[in-house]
Length: 311
Image (cartoon, rainbow, N blue to C red; front, side, top):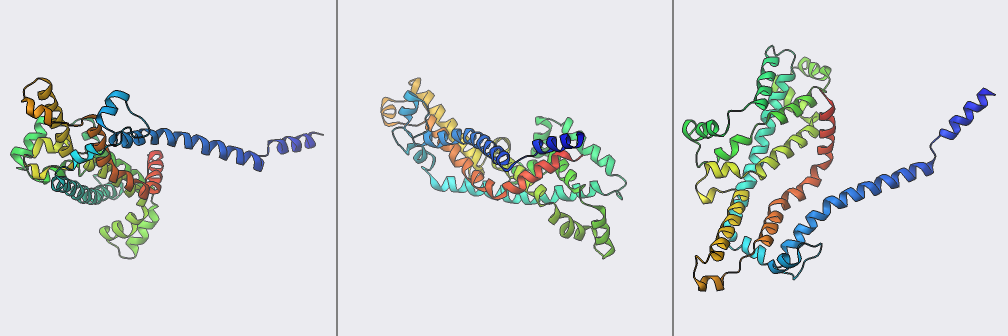
């Protein structure tokens, strides 16, 4: 009697195909709602950038453009050569900085995971200590300007972001998951440390490389404060700082107009967007990153999840 009862309980707890379909529908519906909530703000940004300044001020933001206008984009690209130069500076810094950063942090993480390296614990503590305490803005500024003489050079934009301890820890956690037998086999076959790193380790850590690479690329792409501190030549401005200055210039000009500090002829001739300009700048700045993210999304998600659970 008890055996039949147990069989009935097992059968009653068995998941059927209909249950799986129902769970899939609920999961997809939930993910779709979350994705929609994330997408709507960006759609509103694009819509607002294609609306007139007057419509934004009077009616606020909406999903669809109000009183369609490209005045904000005309203001952004009023001097296309300057914008293209700023784009080129940012793209070159992002590509070069991401490549060098990946190589440096992968090499460092590989060394710190080797048990044959006697000083690995001391160096690991040294890197971790810099996450807790830093020299501060003033010593860093003095180091870059007075000691290293990097003021008004591209190295002042490249070096500060080329190495991150957080990215190092992510890479180190991932490399620790590679079986020691693979590295030992490579050494038995005559591979040196560099060949082992570049031909054995790095192909196995592609998800971590994609994750860390995206972090580094976003840091370079969104960087503007280093240009504000170290760059004086306007031809060397990266995209973010160039657009930041455009907004500040228009805001300042609006204040001059409001305080009647400019002539009436200038006031009648000026029609500068402010809110729509900010939205257009957001689209111009985030567009390339948004388009590039789907290409590495699979590796990015895998690298985040695996790196998060390893010690």
